[in-house]
Image (cartoon, rainbow, N blue to C red; front, side, top):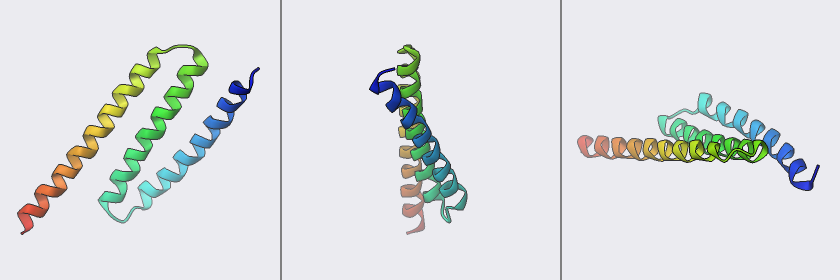
Length: 92
C-alpha cells in the first residue's frame, strides 16, 4: 500500500465523523436556515465520500454522480434563497 491508500483510509473516517456532527446540527438547528446549511454541507461531504470511493475503486463513473449531486445541492440552496427573498418582499 502506498501513502495515498493510507490517506484515503484516514479521510473516510474523518468524513464520517464530520457527517455525524452535521446530522446533529441538522436535527438541533433552531431555524430552517440552519437546516438548509446543514443539508448543503451534507451534500458537500457526500461528494467527498463519492470522490474518495471513486478513486479507491478506480471507477471514474462515480465522479459523474458526484457532479450531479453537486448541481442538485447548488440548485436546492438557490431555490431556498429565492424562497426567503420572496417571503421578505411579501412581508414588507
